[in-house]
Image (cartoon, rainbow, N blue to C red; front, side):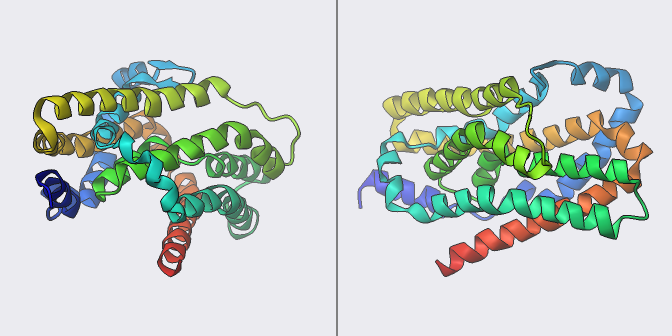
Amino acid sequence: MSAQCDITARRLAGSPLGFFERYLTVWVALCIAGGIALGQWFPGLFGMLSRLEIAHVNLLVAVLIWVMIYPMMVNVDFASLRHIGDRPKGIVITLVVNWLIKPFSMVALGILFFEFVFRDLIDPQSAKEYIAGLILLGAAPCTAMVFVWSQLTRGDATYTLVQVALNDIIMIFAFAPIVALLLGVADVIVPWQTLILSVLLYVVIPLAAGYLTRRTILQRGGEARLAAFTARCKPWTVLGLLATVVLLFGFQGETILQQPLIILLIAIPLILQSVGIFLIAYGWGKIW
């Protein structure tokens, strides 16, 4: 085995989970509480930060997401993209789960809970609005955070990029008809500016920066230097994630404190769907 292959093998093997990764759930919970508290203590500051947006994309959140996904983008090996077709399982599972299962399971859970289970707790008009929100959420697969979870689980950066890119392309064309079908309306206003800007900010620009960084490091120091660089960058992924959690919950802290029951009721179908989708995808991957 060549020296380059040996270095790559050691990188893929990884090391034991670090302190932050091992207790990530604890840090996220603390950041949620901290974000809500900071939002109450400094409402003016968080109000100002929440208004720093373009096409409904908050610029500060975008910067933190760049911090999260940049190390992942540096690991993308463009030379191996041509071999992605040799492993179709992950692509097929991702597309089927995201577009044929996730939106429809979300609307089913929304109707079940808000029209039946929680019927005595929420008025009919609010129930319809919450179901509509769940539909909009269920029809739009995550983009930026996929890179974060892949990085934290030592996933294949190149394969993750292909999965995200395919989902983004499909979302541009399929979002409107799926939402129209599930909401039962014919005229759906698609936030094109937000969709396109999100793809540019969370995929195209970080990918370009990661490619240029990877190319420069490989030219100057080879795989060993690249491995050292990505190791130094890895803590920033977790720090960016935690800072994003603090910021988002700081933005919504007042709403959470004023309507805790509503937040809890909305969270129940979301949690059930997230767990269910994970089990479906994981189980399918295991038996394929």
